[in-house]
Picture (cartoon, protein in one colour):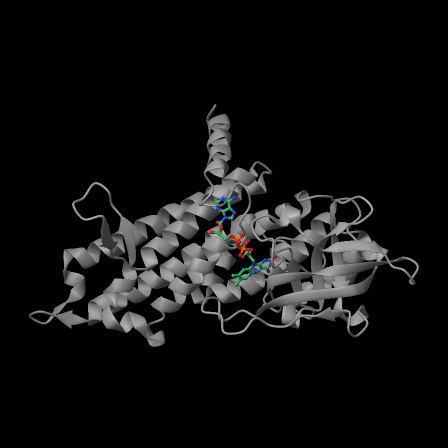
Length: 363
Ligand SMILES: Cc1cc2nc3c(=O)[nH]c(=O)nc-3n(C[C@H](O)[C@H](O)[C@H](O)COP(=O)(O)OP(=O)(O)OC[C@H]3O[C@@H](n4cnc5c(N)ncnc54)[C@H](O)[C@@H]3O)c2cc1C
């Protein structure tokens, strides 16, 4: 990815490609078509770590880390989620306080979990509360500079989704980090949420790539699989409907992401727009890919099965060889992670924020 210029592709300078937001979206779409795990590893490196350093870092921090991250010679990770604080990162317990014996250093303690790339990361963008102010700040924790016993990054094994990406914890125990490694100005949740915004823009594109792969595989299977009078199952309208629903949603999702990408290029994309396309595209990719059960109060039966692309594969859907199950498991994770107060499909109050924002744009 580094050799191809895919990492931090929108960043200008520092050996990065400097492409447009739409071009970066197209890269993400193609990578996630292969597997959401590859896209996750790429997004964390590009949007969360390199994007964060580019937006909030000092010149020294940029010079030190961005070229290596751009080439993939350094691996980065982004530590926001904690074992007790996922959707609510503002309550994080990780703290940074003056180091008791090393002048010019802070001592960071805390635990982060579900961190993409952490077991192999060279540089960790860790968010922790500065004890002095109680405000969240961003710190670049450089593994090579941490004394033994002050940092552990154990992997989380046996995941059932995003198996192609490496996920782990970051455990910091009075880890000495130079004060110069703190982002100089950004405070509070603005820092991590700004990085997440860019990553969520990529997820909106990426999930459409995964859905497109599901469509292509389901179409191929439906043309080859023959049932009843030797007909390809693609001949039956119920199968065609599943494919046409999915193609329609993928087309709408890509058009919406393209428009937000163009607005982002002009500096006119609001965070709520990105929240909307991330939420909608993740939902539609997952719903179209999998077979799921839905509550339907208006029909005689309370529960019914909405059959989508996964069902086209019949029993073979349960086999890794046909890949649809892998995409479905991955798409569940894309829907769950990188949530923000304006982004969670479960949060009604958040949707009120989105609705209010939409009314403002329309007005
Ligand atoms: C494979 C993978 C990779 C990840 N990579 C990273 C990474 O690189 N860096 C990082 O920092 N994090 C990462 N995460 C963590 C991810 O961002 C969190 O899992 C996510 O924010 C949700 O937090 P949680 O798991 O603690 O769930 P919780 O916050 O405990 O939520 C559990 C459920 O409760 C619901 N809920 C929570 N609050 C409310 C509320 N107020 N009202 C209604 N419902 C609510 C949620 O919607 C969810 O359905 C990753 C996760 C996974 C699975």
